[in-house]
Length: 246
Length: 315
Image (cartoon, rainbow over all chains, first blue to last red; front, side):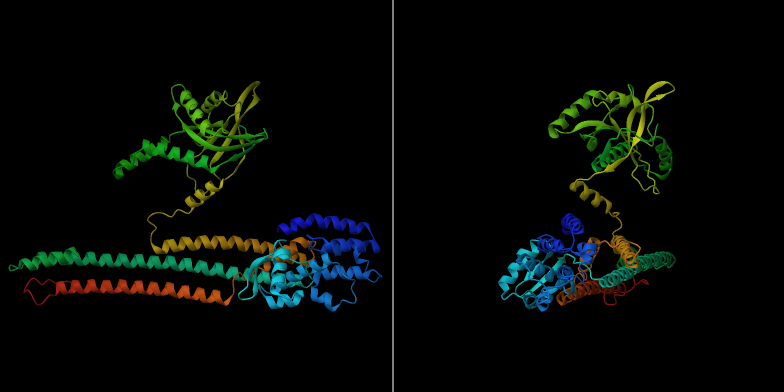
């Protein structure tokens, strides 16, 4: 969440710059925005009317670059290399970071092979360096690198700009979450009731048993008194007292 | 007594002070009325108790930084009913001792217990005005009211109001916030989770534990519902899209499901099975020992070999 705070100022800045200029000058603003090391959110800039006007003009490449950075990945760039202008190294780095964020959207565990393919990196060492230096230290991703199983477990990844269709799926996920937690609450309440009823039953049972024991004791003591046994051996009286005491 | 303060000071109260005051009151009260021995004397004492709720007095100390007054600690004082004032030499001595340990703390005021501030309290208040020109009066209401949701603690300040042409000092209530240090938070949390000592039966412990979990999940549920409404509103267009929030929500949703790997399932099921097995084993042991006792008793009752007669009916 602090990423959003860090970006808020930058976003305001760039939006102001973008709305102040037009046409070709916007190109340089977009270039600056996409190479800035701490800026990962571009949908606000995309929403500025002067930027939207670039569509269809000869500067529409800049718009396409901005859209690529907002929603696309490194492989998108490579496949459309011809229609897009050359990217400076800063932009390349940023696009790769954004690629990692996109991959994190689908899986929580990313295998090294997939990452190496997406990011165009040849060996594990370079990949890990990239992940550690560019992604984790920048704060956009938090996770664990598992070298034995060659995968990257992601615990937290910053959000990318939303594609228009993603809002629907987010709402779906949220409603599923709500449904699950509602069910859980209901089942917890049932368990609590069950525990209470079981303890009630147990107490009743105990009381019943004790009441019966009391009855039996009384009846036995009555019997002993009424039944006169002149030849009660000492053992017998000891045993009968034992029984009563039990 | 007026009901709102206009001095503009913000008060921060630490839970330690509240615990101290209630502890002082409880001690004095229980020392004054020892627990009754028989039920008849209980009713007599009960009637007396209602009338004799003792008032305890003490001093509160803390720090004042600018417009913020933070009350950290408190100590007890003796009240001299004959002179209607607090014990001054004792106060001075305590003040020096506390100064040595906490050099930054000043005497900010005094506390007492009761349901409302009274006229006689003004005397004490005025007496303290030579230490602090505007002392605070912290009042704790020891009556237990299960329907009340707020803390029964009020902080009063003194203000000079003109009433009937005569400027008089009266108490005005001020609002305060509770401020905790980590140690205080832990102890308050601990006290809040105290279970009654005879609630040792497994069912009540289980019910209490489950109730805790239930309330925690309910809170989470309500927060997620708020997010859900917000997103639905955004989709319908009632609320303007705010991208930064959307990004944060999407990163949050990506943390679900929290744990799903196969290894977790295996470990979880193993631990579950272990617990069940141990419970089963304990039940077995219990049953077999009860059986053993039963057999012993039976043998003792119906022992044929050694003696004749002396056989009583043991049901």
